[in-house]
Length: 232
Image (cartoon, rainbow, N blue to C red):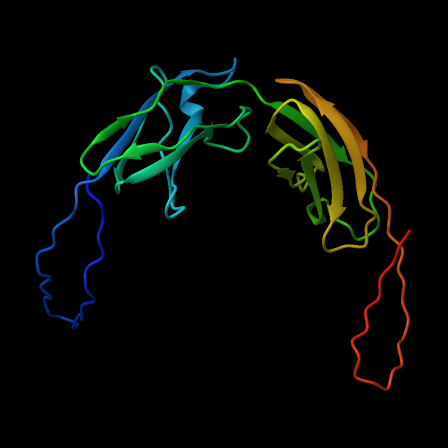
């Protein structure tokens, strides 16, 4: 449980030994806690904890929690205040992320967080169907943003072979789901869905249409800046 500290630059000569002077490594602090419960079908070992230093915004993520006890630990932390976020180690783990108030860590000390139980998140699924010629599934992206002042955003890339997509870990509420392409001429599609905790909303097969184009030539013999905008 030591904090890594960079040493001075050294010059190494081929075929020769280079001695590095002694260096003292500071003792780090530790954060530890327990995942007390997870949703049905989600193992405690599927949960990781991220500790973010409030002063530097740097973060460290724990190893997966113990499968039986749910215990977790993050070591080698400099003194400071840390905000903890409990979430799935993988983006496909369907749990609602939990963020705690900051906890203080002292070098050489151990700070124990309160036990945390996680609840199931909601899921939005669907599949990209018909699409314009030349548009691959991988050219399309799907995003969900909460309505009514909610925070966070979710995104998914459709499967390259089937066009299926899934977004997990959403809280209950209303979301604007947008399907678009950043590289191809495709009309964006937007729909609003309402999800419940642990529930799934399936958008079914979504067909995409080609977008229109506006072209023209501007002839101007001056130095003023010119902008073009469209409005529907």
